[in-house]
Length: 305
Length: 241
Image 1 (tube, chains in turn orange, blue):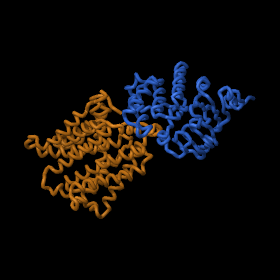
Image 2 (image 1 turned 90 degrees about the vertical axis):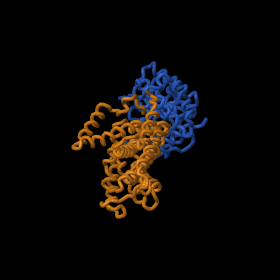
Image 3 (image 1 turned 60 degrees about the horizontal axis):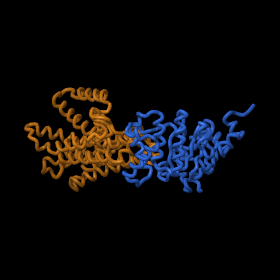
Image 4 (image 1 turned 90 degrees about the horizontal axis):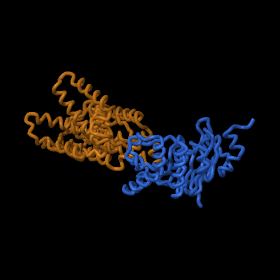
């Protein structure tokens, strides 16, 4: 199933999210809207992680990009308004990515992972110690657009998901995919074949970090409060990598399906099993990874490189 | 006729080992040159220096008259230097066609996608890989792997092609086909420098032979000429008692 025609799938998911606030869900409406918000945001994170992973860079810095975006947007939002603040947050995350990327150019796989982990830890410490971030007390963030529109945060997260899906789709169905796949499978061979490996890695990291930064910015506008432990959490990076592995790596559909199922599952389990829902969550995760090494979309057909 | 490739005083040292010592050689345009020598003579080091995967301690490399000594591998490829590896390294998760597309699309920047695809189709035909175009590279036989390695280098549209023991492991009949293929590639205007252990292949293919031993050029000339030289025989067979 080489040309897995996944556009109908993608469109279906996106349409569902776009219309969710208008579905007659009764008393479940508010809860499902919250679930939908987090599904969209963490799926966008997962797509942005996958975009970077396609070059063989295993990023543990996505929590840091998320945090940079969250703090960047949160600090600026009271002064310049919602959208400029979000763009600024994304640029801060992008600047962080370029800094990390330019010092880790020669690193690959696990070595890059360690460097990106260190990067993430350093930034959290900075957020704790610097004065203008509010330190350990945290940072209050105003709701988007002055709070006049209750669905604002939801649709902002929908926008981020839309952007992440579009980027990932472009990267998957353009020559960029071959450059990424070649870089991942052997940098030396890729270079000898003319692939500008450094550029491919930097661009991937930059694009991924912009989406992660936007996600962080929107997250702050939903929770209305940021703390270094929450915004720069390593758990965020882990979640961003678990979803693509669960759904299917190196594709757009994989993280999308993975995000909907996994984040949805987490929220549902949290509701049904008050005590120890994480045990069930973990067990399901392990089973899928054991029996579906190519993730949920592995059930659909052959993988493209 | 100009020089396709010129190597001037190239040296490389790995810790205590002098892998190459002031090696100078050249490849004429349209020529097929063999570089031979016993194991450890520095042949692979030479190829890695030429394609830019390692940096020389001294010396210069000219590609079609242009100094490429300090350029990264991808830029050398863009300027017309192609290379096939000894240990075949296909991208296993990509199809054969996609493997070639990597070379075609990125080997010459600015090439349109349509043009790259058309060129890949040509290379698939030329190398006999067309029936396997949609197979994953990870599923190929050794012979097909070898062809893919050569085809992928060809996909970058090289003016100078470096081949690292691409015949190793082939049966005599298969090697014969490969020799014919390399000739066709040369006839299409590509200069070829190849490393080879199989002497029948060297004899059949090479216009000229350079012999390396302990990182130095010890002989140069036609196959018949170098095969007669005492130093070459000693290098391969050991000194007579």
